[in-house]
Length: 373
Image (cartoon, rainbow, N blue to C red):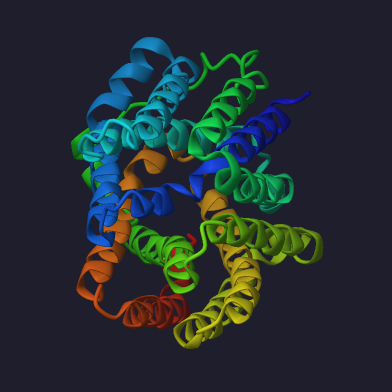
């Protein structure tokens, strides 16, 4: 098995394992009686702590241990956060402590995984690589949320937590044989500031992209609150997986050649979906919008990321993939603030992604060369 296939396999197995319970974490906290504001605070802490870890701890650890060994931190931290979540029902304690552990775990996973993806992908096949990276977890991850939807109402969260932990341990096996001695990660703040200024348009797009992505994450919570069934997050998660998989089979192959031209088309699709999300009022239409929305979001992300990764490959991409966490977290925090501001009427929240998609389209038309040069 070549290196990029090992990355696909590990990421897919991890996604299958975490998808069993991951879509349920917000619903789980809500069913324990925590208000939506407290649930959103959980994720605010998650991302802020993760960003601090990424900037001040991750790079020194990679320099000392190597990228793969630092990546291994993800597994015990993710398992610990799941164990703490499972005890939350019988031994109440501030969930914000779990958010700290989970935030470090998430960033310990995604920064190295993105570096592996860019490093081991062929530049000319970047569209296909990104497409498979997104779509294989969606294709095989259809059953994870459904399994959670079946098991959680019947046996509760604890057995599902155990199943997820077993899956996490298995997911590391494809990456175990990798040797990453050639991967050097460094971050010098003076040089980093210069890069931020040099690629300011690119980082602005990263900020806007993450508002769009995180708004789609909130959609699962919104549908759960709209419908009120504990099975809802699992159903929504599986429908999103189906939508993402359909994209790969029909459009993913064009991302290598036409990725940059597909970005505005995908953005227009997202705009229509966001308007539909604002008017949904019943389960059937919510599920239909979920499938179409996942297709449109995957369409956008693969077109966008394949173009961006081609641009930064072999140009100190490790540094970029760490620095991008600044606009990433800022974009997600913007979403969380919008949720707080619209908490009395959550339908109004979707004006945020609506405005951001329009802004992204305008910027893309006028700043495309700055973005992709």
